[in-house]
Image (cartoon, rainbow, N blue to C red; front, side, top):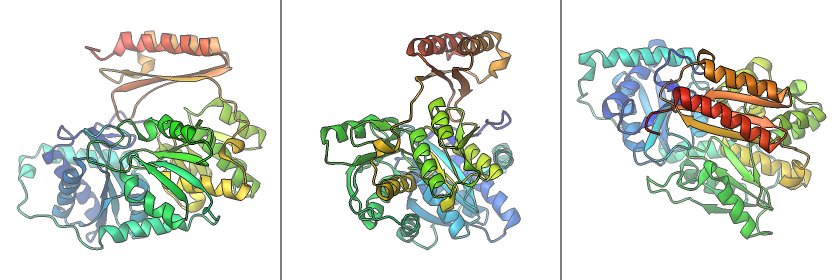
Length: 461
């Protein structure tokens, strides 16, 4: 859960509208300076790698952050357009002090964001983000810090292509199966995956066909990508028999959703199930345990239990899934949204490209289709309703909302779930209801959503 003390960092870094605080020319430079100061305190010769997605604003934000880092004495290397997990891999494999990603993931092109990985490839703990945030505000409040630096920034070698090739090569070493017979339809979301996916799948001899792989700075996630997995599913349906599966990435390709050969959307819960079972059958799932989140469907928990696998739940956000994995020794974890973390391959964050490879590898090794691998997953009806709010007041402090939540839990009586939480990156409340019947699910979701809207709803909406 996002700490109430943090004002800039959410569950996945800093996000906002490009050109507006905290993503202005001034503030992005100061974010780089604050991060640089933090790095050189422990390593006076610190180096950082910075990558970006395909948004129109990503280049200038990357330049401003890099300039701020350089002004603090950090040597900066640019990886250019690269996926978020690509930067995490480079940070840990090339011993950088930090990896920085300029991306707003699945958000529209007008938004952007800044994510930071430590030198071990992990996202920064909340406490570390808070310390950096306090320095950012200190710089903002110090008029001397607002002076425009006179030096220009030029990223150091090695070159962008070499860094990307290093990441692609590492991905190929994570699989051992022959994928040459796999026919794959890929939606790159006009995002970062366009820089790596074609070369990666070519290297693995996958017969890949690409959609939304022509970014223009403004079409990232536009009616494509992980928010629209139905697009790939529909394309697979139109060409029944031509593709074995489809995959769709989000803007920074740290997650993936799939379509089976019949055009049915397959989410992260199903991928966790097939991966967990495959690892367990091979004796490679320590403790017979995986980590999911509060949003994962009860059907997943039941299906795993039937295979002798226990499921733990973490807060939403792949950094929190990873924290629970490290604490419990689990090597597999993820989210319904498609963030899957394979610790047996030493990944330190969700990776859509790696997930796609692992799914195809399991299909190749078992000789089963994607549909067959998840055929017994019985999904409880689930709905998620989102409401924009004017402020994120703890729900327990709003009697009207708390009464609605408690009434829903009594109504379900253990045969369903209620999860009400705030988005970590937007002023949005999310209500998730699972129930045995569609009618009850919709009724309870509407009641709780109405209470939130009445008490906290954004004005003018």
